[in-house]
Length: 462
Image 1 (cartoon, rainbow, N blue to C red):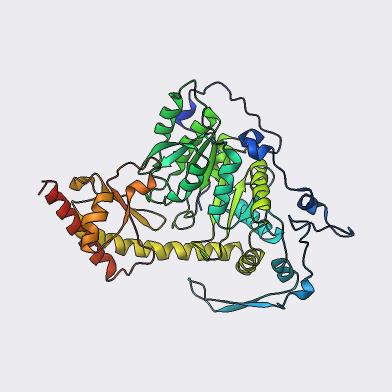
Image 2 (cartoon, rainbow, N blue to C red):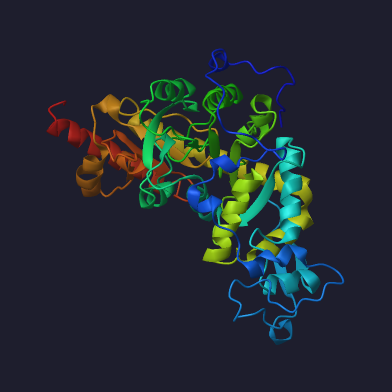
């Protein structure tokens, strides 16, 4: 993986800094002023708050791992599990099947209430992974586990936004974040993407012209690699440009990166590049997911970033669901421990190669039937094509999908689903992850092309 150069940051967006922000960074690189009022005023209850004090030689007369003092920690003698055997497939890159045992202390931890931030074993392993992959020395950041990165992002929005607060959103945006933001009544500011994702130029324009009588945004959200839905990936220089704008206006980046490892050449992350622009850190909150690499059903993801923000997320977890499934964490940890970091990265490269091969076949079918009718960015990561039908004169893909496409027996996700405003869009999102590439993909594109021609006839364009 390429590493960022040690030279000074170069970006046109850092030449004319605004007045220094009022926010302060504490010695640990964390930012309490990024927290919402709710998060800043809430702590883990007194019982779970005692948990970090446990240790060898300490006798506890309380039930530290339960947020309900009347529930208590169950006696593990009553649990019916003695061991769990995990039958592992051969590695995608070749090798033998393996069986590993989940037993002893790790099984005991998997069967019991656990820390809200996650099992120490897997958090330590993932901290090592983040240091290895992103080049960040331990110290001014931490890792917390969640029931998928979706769970962590939802809690993060509550941690950094007050009701009605503005938030800068790359657009089109991953639609899964919209329900939580609507519940918060957040003012979602659409920031256009180009073929490299979030536009630093557009971000600067919005912030430079922000009305003086309105509350300024403190948070920007982006899916920088293999973006769902656009398929765009931000280059290293683009990320540095965005970070320079963030420095000028003192912003926190929510880096939602579930497709980071689904690229054949890893791109330096915002989390990696952060210290080139913010030496003190504390301005990038990163989300990783195991859904695309290990299992979607295991519901396991992890967040990395400022300690105060992660603590606020942990407080939310303590009150909402106590902690992410300890069994899921233990299963994932046993797999990761068996592989080691090099084995994990080898598996990730094989997964990236797998999806790249599917993309090539899928795109060939799209080109065969949609050439001249549509255009798209060929994704270097992820599992989606964001098909722009404006070359055919289509302005509203929702109407096309609901009428002409459905009549032809083909469906895709209309673009308006990915805009906070719900505005009409000429795009549709299609996925190549599980579709039958030999039969369904070419036939689906043939039907979509017919639907486009039918719509063009209705519009008087043919």
